[in-house]
Image (cartoon, rainbow, N blue to C red; front, side, top):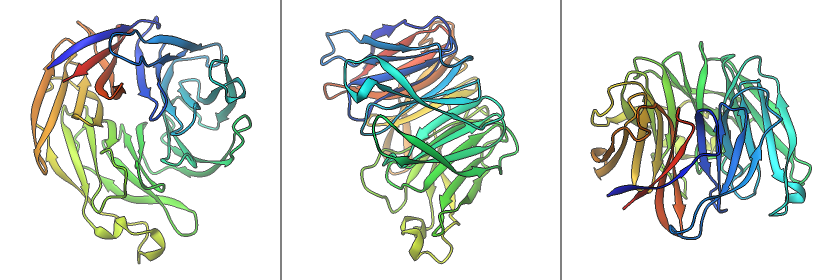
Length: 345
């Protein structure tokens, strides 16, 4: 059963992105109203989500994406003003006002996404300028984070829409693009980043990608993608060498990935967002439908839940998984400027 348990309406324009922190009771939202918001996740389903901070007056255009550093209250915001903001409570102390610690600049056009690597060593950004940038965090002082661009990856031929770092492999990054492809990026033994694979199964813009949640490196990791072609596809790494440390591989920057399955057809318009979580894969898009798929056997999926018109007549831009006191919830954000929270039972 699925039921809506909350609606967060802090924003005045469409909600582009949502992410709950992996270990802290915080959830962040990005909006076209040029701001991001941080909410405190309640301790139980009977309590409300409370607004902690509205991060405004820094970005000059839409905030397109938000991303949490895994073990700290550090938030990255990506904006159409071509910059990325790095935010933290003053002094790193809970309850203090949030401040912008750093601004990452270099992209020529709108920044579409930002993601942290699993340990927080790297942060990656992508843009309408067709590039993916990888930045290294080389100062671990909580109040004095510094970033050094270590790679500018320019093999996509159109806008780069979304990024995802592996949850267990520091040097595994994927990107989704308007050029209809997904690219897999790896860091080699010399510290150079390059394209390890180009995946071409989708027939139109690839809007979203997300890795399967894992706590240990997998022999055959998987991720999910969604597209303007209205399909949701699950990918798996074929060559076992990919699971080895790069120093042990004969060709450290070549991998083979294939489509393990195309999920059952559900959407009638482009699929803008996918999220892989503890209750399966969630998808949403231009038709206003949220679909949740469950895996019945390895590589065999079925539709577990459908939520039509989840944001009434509005398109849905993002879905993201979260937890409230051990119970699984799904967040959705749409053109109605609302964040809706769904309990998945």
